[in-house]
Image (tube, rainbow, N blue to C red; front, side, top):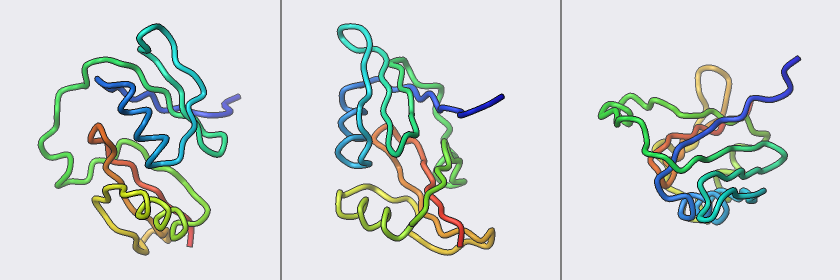
Length: 122
């Protein structure tokens, strides 16, 4: 039986990615592997993201204009998290708003160019 699905993101600069997720998005680093690190796990509210140091897949030039998301994160309070991230200087590609699918959400562009949507049920 499934208990959790964990995203695995690639990065070419693991220390910078870990710093961004800690300082900007409020995640905690649970561990790194190898020296220098080539793999790491971060978590917030018991939900983890794994990172692997590797060349990213080929870029998609339409990614941002079409808002092709890398992950959607379900949250409890979109306004509170949006305010927290705004105070930390996070880059938003879409500000907070109510969506036709009965969610209040916003989209963040992370330090490696990934698009992460955060949404709460209305």
